[in-house]
Amino acid sequence: MIARATPLGIVGVGRMGANMARRLKECGFTLAAIHDTRPDAARALAQELGAQASPTLAGVTERARIILTVVSDDRAMRAIFAPRGDSLLRGARGRSFINCATITPAVHLEIERLARRAGARAIEACMASSIPQARQGTLALMCGGERATFRALLPLLKALSPAPRWIGSAGRAAQVKALVNMVMNINTAGLAEGLALGEALGLDLDLLREVFSQTGANSRVLETDGADMQHRAHECYFSAAHAAKDSSIALVLGRQKGLRLPLAAATARQYARMKRVGLGELDKSGIAELTFRGRGGRGLKRSRD
Amino acid sequence: MIARATPLGIVGVGRMGANMARRLKECGFTLAAIHDTRPDAARALAQELGAQASPTLAGVTERARIILTVVSDDRAMRAIFAPRGDSLLRGARGRSFINCATITPAVHLEIERLARRAGARAIEACMASSIPQARQGTLALMCGGERATFRALLPLLKALSPAPRWIGSAGRAAQVKALVNMVMNINTAGLAEGLALGEALGLDLDLLREVFSQTGANSRVLETDGADMQHRAHECYFSAAHAAKDSSIALVLGRQKGLRLPLAAATARQYARMKRVGLGELDKSGIAELTFRGRGGRGLKRSRD
Image (cartoon, rainbow over all chains, first blue to last red; front, side, top):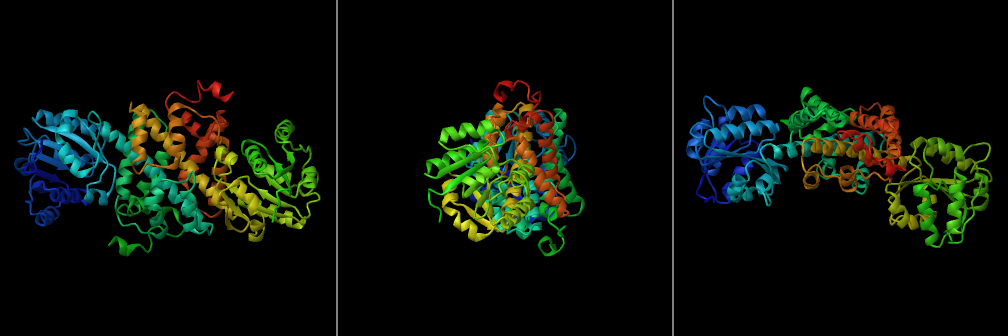
């Protein structure tokens, strides 16, 4: 079992990672080392939480027994677990890694193998919620990897999620996560089209959203993003750039299986277009900037500064 | 106000119309005339409900004061309200028409004008629910047209819906309805892709649907169609052919407004493809037959007979 005094490391303190660190601190866990590719961000959070920032990855492994990684993509995951140079794998014997990034499922398999070779253990803990849930410890966590490792890490996982769930072997949780985000992104892109057409027709969008909520058009993203699309409130919880990445992870899985996924493909193209026109750092609701007449991100400057 | 003895006519007794007729009868209304392009269907329902089948449209107008029309598309609407020949408009002075079909909004405007010229009144009452709701009088009804006419018809509308809603002038409710179905169809087509990819990856689809329901992938169609997609239960409540029609109504509205709606377009293509490969009479959930490996409607024969 994990004692609260077990030293923890956190790698990647963006919007999600920083709030998970705050939550763990609040629950009485011991934050021993914080690392980020932006040293300023690591230092600021370390100071806030009375922890130490580590300029190197190997330094995190040295100071911590359990290391939570919350990075952005496949490339970043492979970099922190590099077989050579500064890496979390240096001196990793006996360490446990909890990897939270939404990445290609096969990369979790790679990392699990590398960790095992280094005498360490790794599980994936995919997050299906957003920033407020990270802060409050109410994330939906889907975990993959060895079940025994999952069980050993449960006390810590339970500080982050009311009901961490073991999905299956390494890569399985990441597959489920890719599917969740693929479907969520499709529903989001579709909602942005429906509201944009309603606006173009001169309909009252409050009424339209209410009717949607009472009919077959209802969805979780209608609740979370509908009003934001209408009012152009695209402060970032889950960025369009992340949506683009996740949709493309699912598309690649589909291609590998020989499936035709036209909705997923159209959605990935829309989110890729957001990045191309400089709107990738808006929240995913910002896709409405592509569909509403005369928007295209114009007049949004203040909220993006 | 409408007395229960006011003679009613029903035109179009398909899956929805027949059940609305049963409901009205049960509520004590007087069914005076029933018409359908399939005379057998009209006779069978007339016999069941102790009403009279009318072989002509003019015969319905002659016998009834309020006429409910529940036909399938623009063409059928224009045919029953034809300016010449056998038509509901013959001798229509003083009649009220309640038009329930999901059709192009502009056609409701045409019909309202034609009705007014014939000394009659017409409102649209767009239904955002399915067969069980039609039978039980729990439809979501969105109405458009003159508000006074809507008010006068409320006692009858309330037999069909707990809360009939006036949306605006003629065509407005049909616009909202087109948007509801456009977004619903997108969510349905997207869900069919997510579950198909889950299946191809060897994931447990019960678990996947449960995770979807707890995350940003949740939607009304996940509740209504998710299990049916998994288990290939495509008994028809709302046909793929209707979904194709409704998505294309919305797409045309979008084109008229100069909007780019790639998700709506991809969805319309998928439902059009269902019709092309002979699956148009499956329920909309049957779109999973296009996305799951090795399905394509094979092995579904019994449920379609």
